Image (cartoon, rainbow, N blue to C red; front, side):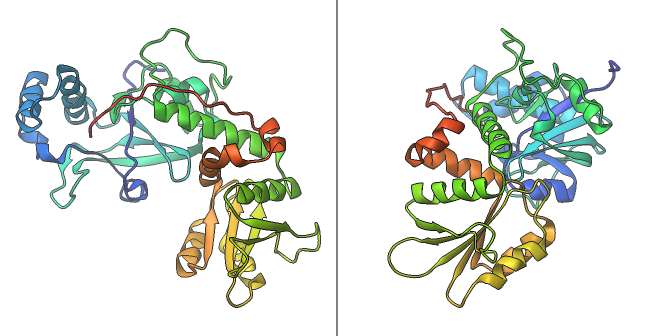
Length: 332
């Protein structure tokens, strides 16, 4: 990779769709105001930060003010940006197209720059080392070790895709709580896609619903008329009609509509997929609140939450162990 190609990483879990739709990157620290009014050197940023956020530790000032300085002054038009989004568990890669500006109409994440998003790829396309690096606890940071992997992903060239490729002893790749959590979800989704297809996934969803406190009945295979699982919270209505899809592509509107067609008056619907929902399906779901949806990432979240209550058969396939890990407090 050319030495003049620079790749940055961004963390912003608020309004993820907004950043993608508006083609911007944004960080917080709104109390700092317009950063372009600060002299373009680190000492001035440290002093300005100390004036706004009093009694912060030296390390906190260095981390936070340093990120703001890099966002405004070191990141250049033409640099690349890697932005992992939680809502769809994708890695978004773009290119910075504009200088810093302060958005006075934004309440919290008002420090912004324009970007052009070039590619959206699932996390499974990248090595574990690359995912660890963009799991840094900072909001804005330089991608050093796996920059080439992200650049090549734009052009569908794969590098370092052995998931055992994690640099031992490299203290610059920080596996924080969030990084480990996301890696665990990646593992769960990989194992679900590998081990649970068709009827097996229906059985697993039924197991999960039971762990959540529902009573479930799995419909006879091949003759369910779109009602894969019938669930009740207690002895009384409402009845929940569950449809489960293990396809890899996004679920479209017509598929979700097919669930609505199986529901009687007073029923609620639940649609479960290992993938995600197409835009038209999301619009349909918003207009029909009696149907709830669970995508792959949300399914992984529920498995983590109710894992202890799930069957031994499931635990023999998806093997997880509770551990204690340090958490690093950061500011935005």
